[in-house]
Length: 371
Image (cartoon, rainbow, N blue to C red):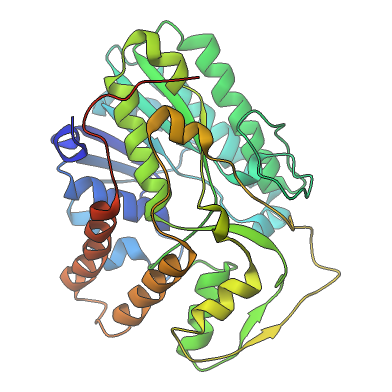
């Protein structure tokens, strides 16, 4: 079944729908014809893509905290979702040093609360739990991490996501093996794209600086990351959810597992390359703000995505230059739109979704699942 046909009238629960990735995913789901309920804290940036797109009026918008176990239980039982995407999290490395307990409480216990809530369902449901590429025990090696590599994390954020992965695997094996509920976890690279205004992220920091004519401060110019447009992993999440929901019982174990969704190898670039490519599209300059006394952050990070290719038929479509071009183009166009003109923000964002969909070769026939 084609993607657009599958999602028509599907009941989808999205946690963290007010965030950057959550807003892109919610708009895409609505565009595909899904019925979307979101549970999240209010947007934590100003401006926020969720607000610019006026999504609160287009889906079942619920404000709540995933750390509230009873709330999550009531929400899932009431909505009876076909599909769940769990994105709600404390997503920032440096904030996790300031708020380590809150980070673990949200990222680990919040995940467990959703897993517990899903145990109530007595119907088919595919749940995709979004973690991060930083869940791996980073050894600063040149080659990419595979799904079977050791989990870990130096900082509280990374370690909390590794712990969430362990919890997901444990609950899947302990409670969902004989269930109609199908559960997978997904680990994406460094996601960028229009509409991210978070603090302490390199692209929003760059756009803020360029918008006011200031030099872009770069704290880790030599750190290498797997840069990818936000639509790349989201397309993978949608495909995985569809495959899980449609799959036969004998294929369940090949899909209900962990998957990496990273960019092409050539998109693993130093931060300096990212900034200098942005400056090819938006005139400005940058300044090295490296601080040898700063808190620890990984230097080298790379993902292997062979598993997603072989088991799902997924592979990245937009290379490094295209990713930067689309990202900068979104911000430049958005700067010309009044905050009240949500229809224009939607058109801008949907145009990129449709452009990506046209490049996305989604197989409409079942693919053979291989080891």
